[in-house]
Length: 95
Image (cartoon, rainbow, N blue to C red; front, side, top):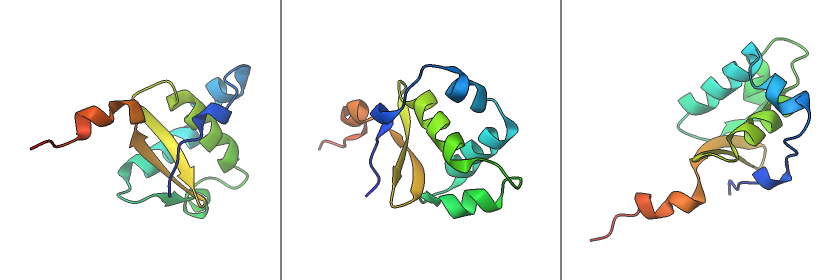
C-alpha cells in the first residue's frame, strides 16, 4: 500500500528547497509523474548520474509537495504522486 508520510519531513533549512530545483530532482519528478504505477527507487537511481542522492531527492520532493493538492507518497520502496486525501470528495462518483 502506498501511503503519505509527508508529515515526517522537516521543511526548515536549505536541504529540501535547494534540492527540488536540481536537474536530478526534476528528472525524478518527471519519471514518477510519467509512470502509471509506483516507481521503485532502484529504477530512479539507474536513471540518475552516479552519486546522486535519490533518497534525499525523494524526501525533498515529498516535503515540497506536502502542503499542496498532490502528494508524493511511498510504500514498499516505490514512489507515486497521489491526490491529497482532503480532495477525495472531488474524486468520488456518486450516482
